[in-house]
Length: 616
Image (cartoon, rainbow, N blue to C red; front, top):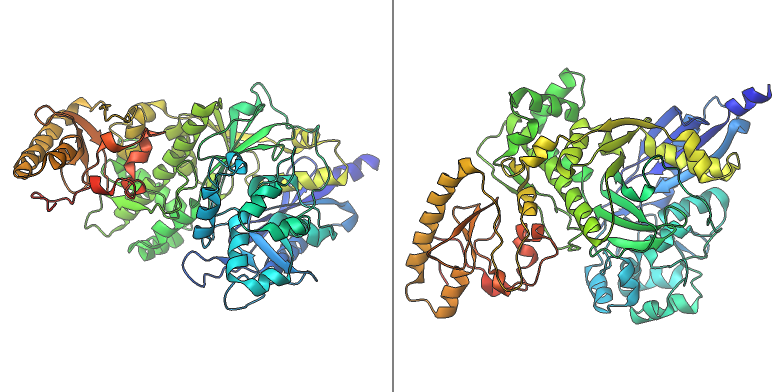
């Protein structure tokens, strides 16, 4: 009887995502017994403003939990664990919701993680160059909490004065479940500038104009809960510091740990004990991944056709698209289908490692086609662009000192085999998937299991409940042939060492079969440039001679310091016609060149319009 009772112990994991709340009933072996999901509402009152209701979120949490425990004796439910987005919840001194909007709608009291309203506030914060910024990659993101708090103070004075509590959403959920307002070390370290050794830095909050939080002894933003020092995660054969955990859903996070603090430009952290007790966490991220794929697919003119055919085949739209790509690829690897189609994925700015919220997305290589083939190709190109973003983050982390050899994926996008394979192929690293598809919910349940006392540590709970499922190996041939697989414009750029501050050329090898075509295009463009030099000043001529030339409406092909002897460089589709390396600072990564608008404000005079006879 005693053994049967132990076997019948269950734990509930609750995951609050951007658009829905999910719950799972998980047994002591880590098997998902029951699963439920419920949508939650998002308001977008104006561009870049995204709001939710904490009451709506909590009601959904209760609803899905009741569904998964239905028919189970309450005594068998041993613990509940939460994970959630890093959205900001605002409550008054009586724990009632307060408006985070100009309309005064109190039920809309959550500023979502992806809200970008606090642009001027984050610029002010970053201009301080305060030492706490060293722990967020050198520049704070608009998605963190300090700029949002400052926006509320500057724009919603009534809500600011009435506010009694500001919660990160996970801490709000634990307060609702327990009545305890203690904050978790993970949330306040990662999104609020708290450090585990020094605590809150008074000088930072005073410098940015939030000194009233200091006067209240930080009561509104949190007292830290129990110390978790001494716990760890199990790792077999390879140290945990060689892994990056990638949580990929609406957005994506790239979590890597180290024994000593590593400061990575453009990547958040290092945060001590924020994820794994005793280790330092760096967190890279992409602000829109699942949301971007959905946006691109649903916005295409052929989406109704896709919906209809997917429904007729009893498949999801993404399963159908993956199958359709297999049909049209013929004998080629699927990744080679997008040789002439490229996506720059920063439709919602770049979180890591460029840390530029002003960046915009782009699609280059479109044709007049409006059919399902075209939709499938742009879907593929978007997935490849996201994988190249991961590669850019990983290479930046590795350049700073991380040693990464494996990706561990979880979240909704990890259910898409094409997404997973592209991550493996383009990064060149094996991808490990959990045995349980709903691995995020299992992780939340593991926290509940630890809270129950049924396990002595996170390590023990992980060893018992966490199971590795499939390992997806990269196709290194695809990665090696990246220069012909323009699945990714960025992958070609990443093969070259980039530019130096003095304008020295760094050349990328052009595949032999493309050389003749490129030479013709370069020759044509140089003829145009020579003609346009007539009557120009010496400085204007220098700009042309030291630049990157656009041979047609969408492709950069040449780098040269000598107009008479250009070297061919194949750099796929870019929005600009001319760039002057000699005026540029040293780039941390050559991928930065691909999206030239990122540097336009600094080098505005170095750009000329694209025209056979440019107007200067």
